[in-house]
Image 1 (cartoon, rainbow, N blue to C red):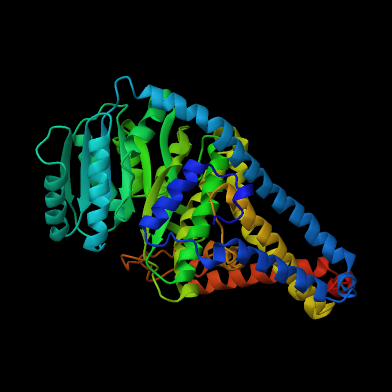
Image 2 (cartoon, rainbow, N blue to C red):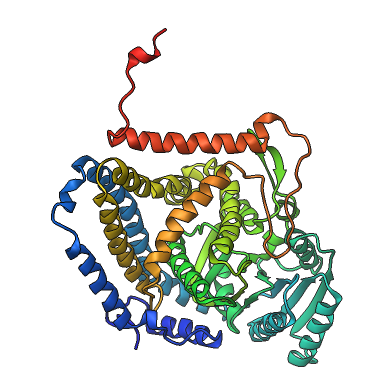
Length: 530
């Protein structure tokens, strides 16, 4: 039984695609936490919790505390509601028209396609699936196609060649180009792959799909994407929906499923403005004239940032953010294609959930924050007001998401212990409503999502704040490589200074909240007089 299918906004066809891919990944059966019985049990438990609280609990916390949280909540949930509505408008009204026009466009003179796949330290079983899917997508492309494999190990080269011969055989539609490099990182792998594409002298309107070594693309990938580039010369890139096959414990499977459901909603919303907030490295497609531009290649290969305190440091991770910023700065449109699903094989970096989440969040949020400031500097006139505000919100939300937690903690300590219970009831209720809203993105949702949503909010915000003061610290989870440490740094850029500024910011944040709640008294001006 599909949970709450009567109020699901997701289309039957799209939902069937997600379910089919999840089943092929081995985790597609309806779990107990996704059944309607589990959802009824959750609602009953929350209602019982609310009824068990004494009537005095609801008036024990001052109206000032509730009002402060309520005003902030109206803003945050209003922003979330705006994303939700925009996502529905995009998927139900705008994109169907775009899809029809794109399908019509490829009937006339379809472009050639390059599928660039980067592979490093991925087991042979996954590599086989990834390249099999890439070769099948190349064969199904409306025009000619070339698969460019940017690899490190000789074993991968032998495997890829044998797969190409078995799947493609002797034909003249699909070519294979292999680029061998040293294991110096994904940025170098991409740069060498881009140059290999450039040497093939593609036409300006040909397209290049950049595919990660653990991403399995659908057979109709090219046919369903290249038409968007023919419709508008300002379209520089696009990305698609994703689902995951998680090779880890159950909690990781739930966490990734939630993450991609949220991603689908957010990407649909910003897709309405034709400027997505990231061009995921898992699978994004670019116009060939951009990929072959030496300036673009240098941006991806040698990107860096000049920080007022940390100085200049090179980006190790976040190649997708570098390519995104190049297109954003140069005024290109970046589209979202919600009816194309890419399956990603996820290997958590640790068996411990909290440890793995911390490692992944440090990488994800570090990539975002390192590019965030320079994207904001472009201004709303250049990139659009909604896109600009969405980027600004990435910086504000890491603080505003912590307000409720710290206010409840302070109220529980200094005002009434019931404050913590009321806050728990608020979280259980509101996060469940947010969970149900994800039925617009996926056919079924889990009763574990409310807890994971709250974990992502609080733990994720703390990680973002931590990374904000340590932007130069970078680490690949697969490659086990880290950014080089500078042997002698001035005090202003030292680890001590990063920790000091981080601590001061948190203390100031909590102090302002305590002062606003009247838990911390207003300082007497006489105290500061000599």
